[in-house]
Amino acid sequence: MEVVHTAIAIVLVVGLIIWVKVDPVISLVIASLYLGLAAGVGFADTITAITEGFGSIMAEVGLLIGFGVLIGALLHSLGTFRKLVHALLKVVGAKRLPYALTGALSTVFPSIYVDVQVVLAAPIARSSAPHVGPRGLAHLAGAIGTGIFAGYVFVIPGLAAVSIAGLLDVPLGTWMLYGIVLGPLTAVITTYLFGLMLRAGWWKPEADEAEDDPIDYDDGVEQNTAGTGPGERDTLHDVEVPLFTSLLPILVPLVMIAFGAFAELLDFSNAFIAFIGNANVALFVGLLGAYVLARAAAGTERTDKALKTGFHTTGEILLITGIGGSLGAVIEATGLDATLAGLFSASEGAAVVTSVLLAWFIAAVLHLAIGSVSVAAITAAGIIGPVLTSIEVAPIAIGLAIASGAMFALTVNSNFFWMFKSLLGLTTQGALKSMTVVTSIASLVSLPMVLAIAFVV
Image (cartoon, rainbow, N blue to C red; front, side, top):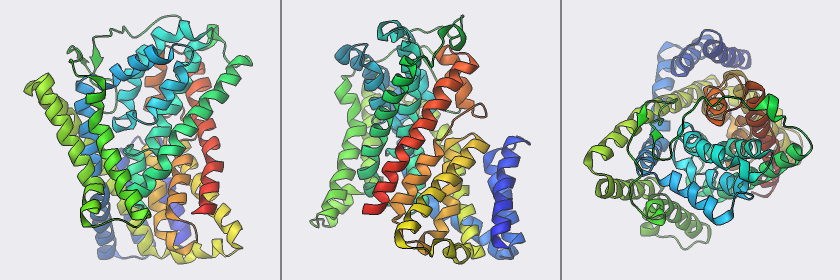
């Protein structure tokens, strides 16, 4: 019966979020309570599982998420990411901009929240589109969509990637080694395939692009959107910090984490290397660097404003992530892992394929139903995490499969979809033919690569 009750709990989460419009945090707590009580875990043990599950995941990723969001908020206040996109345009030219943009979004930009990324990238796409070609806006829109979410789910410190890794107990160094390849590769391949579709006549500007421009862009004006949607205008201009210098708070932590991971892999690690390669330490070093840069270049007032915005965003993300851990702990308490173990009793190869496809499918269905990549990824990881010990597939492969599935078909039930539509100046049909299509392609493109990883790790 635990399988039935788990399925009901998942449907309950989806139904509350979609139809009753209940906040995901409240929905996940209600589902966790239902599952624990209905499956016979008991009153006291259900509460224990919820609280310990929350605390366990916070111990894994709480500081990482907080540090990552704050780094992004501080660098956003310096105009770092706007400068990066302008530099790409100058270096690669307009024709290659879709590939440069999607590559940057999927490697450097995951340190900031997805809403901020699209606000930063959209005006560049709008102004550069005529130079890219007759379908320039469509190609750049697709590049933005796939780059943002390939980075968000695959690349550290993308919040979905960090959350999945924490819920499945995958070391961030290990995740980074695979994700830093899988994320940008998925984004570039998807952007290329979408370009082929555009050349084949997929895009109709008269029907897919809005005639009027609802957003009044100004290169010296940025929107304060580190929360869940567009906010009030921030009239502060970019400050004078060299681009490479302002990127150091991102690059230094990544180098530290990668060095620690390689040291462990090649068996030359020691206590000091493990310390500097620890993801919490590395991201704190990045946060210190971002804070010093912001204070020196932008002043105390602007720095404090950026931190305040980052703290606001962090609270929401931490609650959703923590409650995802609670649901996973309740599922584990039901004994579902023993029940599902029989699903993977086939031959070893078949079990690998079945496990990866099942993880992908659960995340994809949750995303289609809920409309949030992060909530779908966290919920899927919470469901699958307790049964990992029952299958002979590396947790990193299952985590990447969840990430791949969570991207599938971002559509009209997502707040980001409508923000994307407005900022890029698209019709609803145009947003469906770009954002929904490229996230679907990216999900399907990454799946075979995840399967290959599952067979070799």
